[in-house]
Length: 453
Ligand SMILES: Nc1nc2c(ncn2[C@@H]2O[C@H](COP(=O)(O)OP(=O)(O)O)[C@@H](O)[C@H]2O)c(=O)[nH]1
Ligand SMILES: [Mg+2]
Image (cartoon, rainbow, N blue to C red; front, top):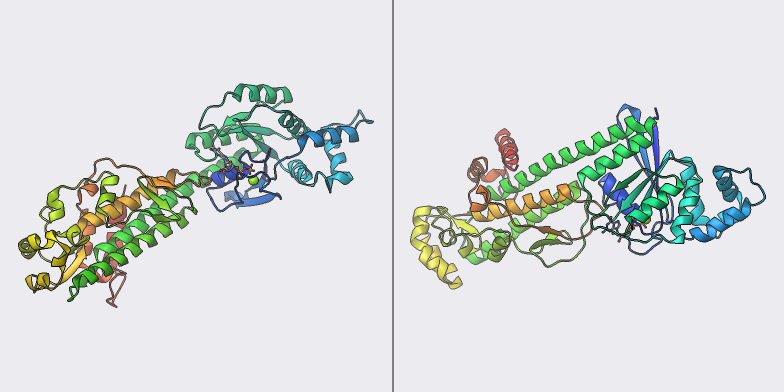
């Protein structure tokens, strides 16, 4: 049994080696990915310590760029000595002057291959078989290491898969798995490690521990994500402000604080899952450079993910006191009194001023509307679902899809969250100083998190 598994990721430039490693290690920060060949210039190791003092070490290698010339060079070097086997030939090459010059990059790959226990040979199956791939494989096969071939880019089918299988078989490589580094499937990953375990029997134990660790990491991230969301929801639900003379200004202040709180939760989720997102998009609700494109207080955005609110809700009737979107997602005090003022509130913005203030005298708490809190929860939950399934080499924008019918989207807060309404001191958005982190708040957080299934 091995105590340490050294696994080299090899293959031509630009076939997705670095992408594969990001996906397998669930870390989008690893290495540099680019559609320009030759982005990875050195061997880069990433080590994971496992239980039972075992280790797995992945090596990302540069692409074998000039394999045709290298193949000829190696054969020239060993021409006069028919007794040399593959490993001898590679060592002869590594000791030769060109290993430091013309083939410096290729030498790094071969050195790493010889030091590793096995190699994953990554193939872009969209490519037809060219001479350079043939020569590259012949060189790698000389290393006499167990090689698992990985067909990458398999999310769409390729006419060349059969040709690749034939070429691999002729070189003695029969272990093949299909995968996609950008759109990985859990089963694909499972099959990958099963195949490796068969190929490198002594590493079976390490591979099992590694898989356990990955599964455990998924579970922990999901649980932690729920708490991050619950905390944001409690903060926003418990938040209130006292009505002052200038209500539109107060509404804006509250909206900004809640937007900021949503952003904080998004940042925490992205960092929890080790994602950095920088791409652009304009579909549905998408995340651009780590921010949702559409505003939390935007009525159209609610519709986009499938929340169709009846008129009643918007006018405040359906959810008790909710004047909500009429004043930008902020709910005012008491149902009875608000009921009397709805006419005035929903008509035009100019009613927001002191005239309303007069009508509201005696009712001075402003809170965030249930609908907005539900919308917030859906946005964050959708983001969590997306991050749970997302490959770490995927740099495409995150787009929230439409939702199924659910209580949350009908604009009703779950019971555990409703409790937070009565505890303004639980909210980090409130300026009250006595933010004691009491036991009950912690319980509510956990209960809310449990509702987030
Ligand atoms: N669609 C798709 N694109 C991929 C896949 N693997 C890599 N890419 C893209 O191919 C390009 C090269 O990937 P990279 O990991 O840098 O390749 P390397 O040179 O072998 O390390 C990048 O633009 C990746 O986003 C895959 O499985 N599917
Ligand atoms: Mg690379």
